Image: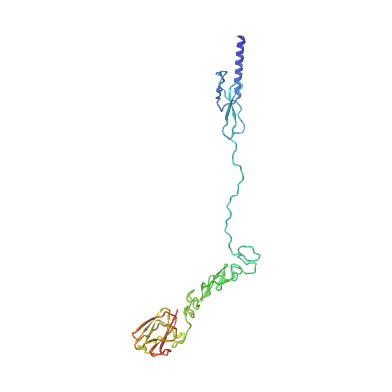
Length: 326
């Protein structure tokens, strides 16, 4: 029995010594949930009574997820303890590949100025004297905006552009056909005398007519009794007879194309007759009755007339002329 008692005592001492070894195991984060020893009942001492006084982990802090236990192992006294496996997160951050320049591409306006035709001047737009012998392209009529750019007649070079600069009494008119070999917006014309622009730009006189004071006229024709331009007067009425006797007043009358002339008098005593002279297709017809006759003139020209009783077809005696102009 003495031997048996000593044996149990040795075993008890050994268990106490084994339990004291648990103080070296740090197990503060995870409660020991291991399986109880099957061989020895460990009811006297539990893991929950021992505070983990192990040295604090001074290693680099794990920035990953919390470590988790991977499995249980038995310590010296066959207690189940947790063995922690470090499962920290692997760095999967984006690799720095340097900033790529994604700035906006230069889409500035292309210089479309006048190209310098000089032999050595590399400037894209010549705003001063060139080096090819031509003068300043800003004001030179023969090199306006570039060497060899000649301004049309009636135009001047201003700031490199051919513009109209008509003298007093003239008007800038667009040409019927753009001039070849020159630059400009129009041609200077005298609307008072230019048959192609008579009274207005583009208003051309019929063939054979001239422009006089802005009106198209057939070249003056002397027809008796109206032999000079000064014989003609303006108006729309020709009177005769009565106090005037055997005469027309006025006998030389100028009217515009499309206007009418009123012949007023006693046609029975002074029958009106058209002359065979002058412009063809006269609108004047023989009138031998009544006291008025309105005649409209639809053509330009000279239309003589006479009194059947007191004048002649040649313009002598009681005779006159109606002159029609544009």
